[in-house]
Image 1 (cartoon, rainbow, N blue to C red):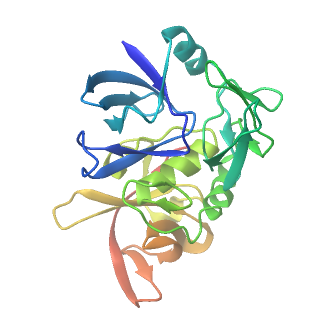
Image 2 (image 1 turned 45 degrees about the horizontal axis):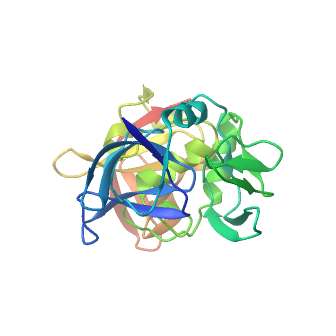
Length: 256
């Protein structure tokens, strides 16, 4: 098995091995993965964090040894806590990284990309936070534009949003909403929910297609056009701007 690490700020993860293929997700700086196959300049990978699979351009990552891969995998995880920040190498070259980037083997403001050491001086998240911190981390993404497959404040989708917020708080969610809906404990009523719980919504065929994070006073923060705050009732999400319900409530889950 071969292994890699993302050495660029944001790399598209595609359904097929083509630049014209749909972006299904993104690989952020410092994320590691297994390389399943290489084919004509493209690599099919499986991300370490959530086992998500897709194709990335083989020019947009570094190969690493299995020893280094396992060292990162079994070490304490640290993530960048700034909307956007710079890291610098020994030549004082600047590289931008977005919120939620992985800082491999981070210690004393230094991170390690196998053969190169970088300095990062921004805010860092590396501990499991209390559940009441989840809404505050969610507010960091407020008004971020919706982007199918996105995982950053510069473009994010509904399940990317919930996954990244939970990640910054020290918890793992699957990448897609329908998979996230398999995690946690079902709550029977909205009244049982707490800020930080997840609400899932389905389409006319009964498929889970949307997810958001519950706030106080029956509000919900979710990515729909942009990351926004709307009202949640027993029917679903009520959009005050449109004066109508936009999503049909399926289930509320307590993850932590």
